[in-house]
Length: 442
Image (tube, rainbow, N blue to C red):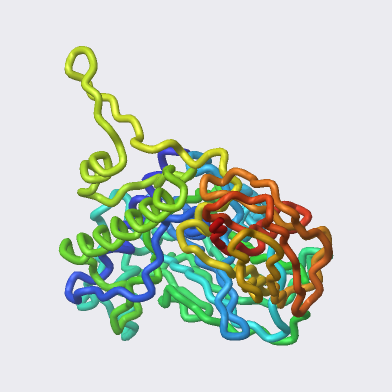
């Protein structure tokens, strides 16, 4: 089954990249899997229902909440990419895949939010290359979408439905049905009937009202199946280096064809993002990021090695590559904070901002910072002072509760030597809330 799932993922990607060969693609809102939080977000769940002569594919991911002018990304629950899951063989609700196909848990940011997500349902013929896709002239249908589903009579043997829900964590109550699409078996038609919410469109934005701000919730994909086949669906998680929603659609609702030149452009942009991340981390710490890039852009492998690695010739002409810089493995500073030099932390429930309200004394001394917290009150918050290598430095710190609103904290810096330091504010679970750099000059 592992091999089948991997092949289905590849087929689905091919369908995705080449659904219309007549229109050149454009890209918008590109988002690359460079920093850890970006890699975490750009994971998708791939579902497949395998028949003798066709395979139904579904891809789901890119969940986010839009509220109060901010967009909060919600990653899927993480699974190892090498692991595939077989669903229930019984008819009806697939309890196995419905339990697996969930997002991470988050707090609802407001009472009225907008949910955004990526969902794409397609079909492929088995073996690949058979079927009559895109041949609308042979169809009696007036629906132009049917050409993409012209797999042949009696090739789809199951009725399958996917329902996306917003679920409250505390009691497992469904707060809202975000999306519902399905496909019916085609015993007498060349193409299967699809139904539901904008079936052919890949990216969706749905307003959700009547929520309770602060409630813990998650997204869930429910899978239902009825039909003559003895086996259920399968699911596997996979990652991509650039978000699927970056490519706009043509007038038929299908993703525009990605030319070789445009693919090269995406890889170039990806490489530039990698360089910015690595170089800024090296500049701040003298070390490589702890989490190296899992997938390099095509054509940049050699440049990556030359830029960040030394090559050493060894016996029999083999070459061993070693990093030019030590990994940032022991630093407690989050890599994404170092690379963006941010003093703001955002999560699904709000944000924490910090700013200096008194100048740093030339000989060290008392500094005051103002912390603006738009989340709920936080207890057990404390400060850490780190040098640029991520090593904790002795300093009179602050510990207490952060109320919702503004809090003034004081930092005694007389024990610090001259240099650049990072003030780190963390909660009781050691999650970094915000950081700020300051310089001591004696």
